Length: 214
Length: 214
Image 1: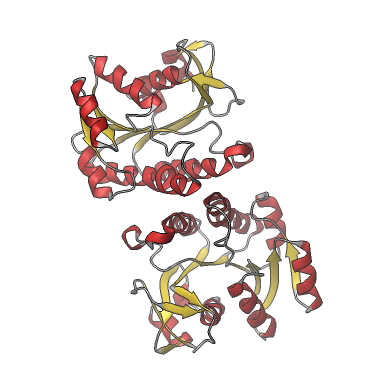
Image 2: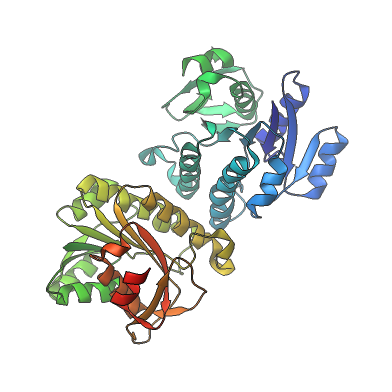
């Protein structure tokens, strides 16, 4: 599969691009917002395209054309205001879903947030962010694409353990960004994740085993 | 019809409550956020309930129970941040849709914004607000309720003329809040507005005529 990574300059995105670049099974196209980010990826031998989640759907569709899967792991980040949460995390995400439809990319993996599907469990401190993630996830579920929604817990930068727990509902806990990237990578062609959504935290199962059990 | 007006303390909401209160056909229940707002309405003889759009769906469903229709004309307003736009204008609105489903209220009128359905025509200055309105409208369209989405242009406080233009797509223009309230009122039992969405600006047709023509 050729995989378009949206948010390729992000902390999970970078690790996913590396995994795909090293893979014998998949290839990668990195989508970034700034030209200098694309150049720096290209210097490392990574195919990269520039497109803005605040721009037209057609630009994103052009960036996606020829790919077999899209992974959305972009985010407006904690430094910008809630207006950007609406424009990027919600509307930007939905634009990439529409772009997938337009470009004929049928497989779509969304990196969401733990319990984004259940309003009563949203993290109070970033409740507005959860609103954006929730409605982007809903749009994906209704899109007709073969989706997987991965909802990781609190993200850490430690080295991955390769051991996770993945299920419809899990208590809040942490997970390394490395293990999130590896779980997304493993989900790409794991049919048991097709049209499924799951919470993801550090656990006791190997990633492939865990994905077979959800 | 007994009509629950959500956002009854707002500028359109107040006028709509008055129209319903004076009506021989419909009756009104006003939903407001603060107890003192409810008391002041009750002193004028208006049935009023307190419920918070940032609170649980069940509270809103309790407020809606026994009504035949809901009008959503609440808004976080221009004074609060974009986080409230997410929590009130988007998630709050969707909660009221879920509450309508729970309480068995089948008729639902949403006051939205001109061209909220077309991303390319969103007002640049309040683009994030349009994102919230767009996805709330989409949730209503997919809800199974008998909906009408009224998308007024720029709101003014002048006296209404009773003359409007209502159509799928209209150029940006203004409309008085009084005429918006009257259009919502007239839409309640106008079957030609059922499961329809329309832009609304000041125009040349009487309200009832205009609604027959959309």
